[in-house]
Amino acid sequence: MFFAFFRVFISALVIPVILILTATKSYGVGFETLPKKQFNVLLFTKNEGWHHKSKTNAVKAIEGLANKHHFNLVWHEESHYFNDKYLANVDVVIFLLTTGDILNTQEQKAFEQFIKSGKGFVGVHSASDTEYDWPWYQRLVGRSFSIHPVIQTAVLSKVANTSFIGLNHMPQQMLWTDEWYEFGPELSKLNYLLTVDEQSYNPHVDWGNNKIGKGMGAFHPISWYQNYDGGRSFYTALGHTSAVYNSEFLTEHIFGGIYWAATGKGLNKK
Image 1 (cartoon, rainbow, N blue to C red):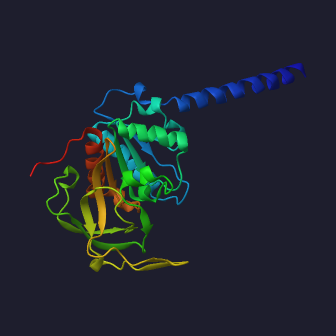
Image 2 (cartoon, one colour):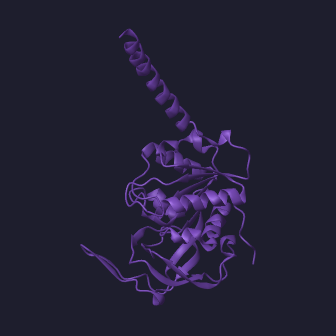
Image 3 (tube, rainbow, N blue to C red):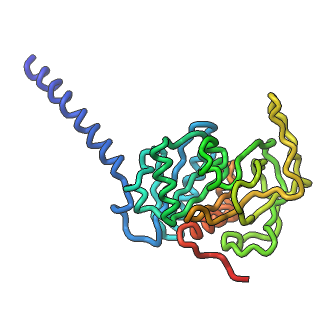
């Protein structure tokens, strides 16, 4: 009887200690423990809205880029890592398939300071469907998601005369199957990289409650970059389905954005 009670008593003490140590270790994951590589990237995938089924394959694709191109990558869905101390060791933050209101006021301030210090941001697909009530972030992305039709194949084109390195591997035009976002107006001065031809797919959609999409007309941007508030921002609307993350057209396009956002390099002189 005594020994049974003793075992229960010890378990009651040990389990909380294990949980505390585990939590401390999880919170303490940082770049200072990793080997030195060309730059450090924080991958952030938190959702407070739509959850993309492609997230698993998308994360694997970014991890593959880290291995191929020799940069450190730490993946988190917890927003408490958005603080000055943790972000001090980060060169680029990627919002990959994020949705909704994902940072509190203090975390937002830390992220703003991160960009103002000269660091980089990369937004993929639904990063434009994130933080609608945060004007600074909306300008960082450059345009806000409005609506989309069903997934379709369409003609994807490079913008003429762009000097961005993340497009060198792509043909001038190609067929691409994805979820084609329709965007609101330009919120900051953007340099456009990719467009989709609305003549090659049906942009019309009706979600009800007066939520209707008719397309964006002759110029329908899909990817862009900008210098913003002291830092660098790259965005691509590609990347809804799991299958597209198996394509080097997309992954090397994203890496071009990561590389530029991290270093400020990669703009070829014409």
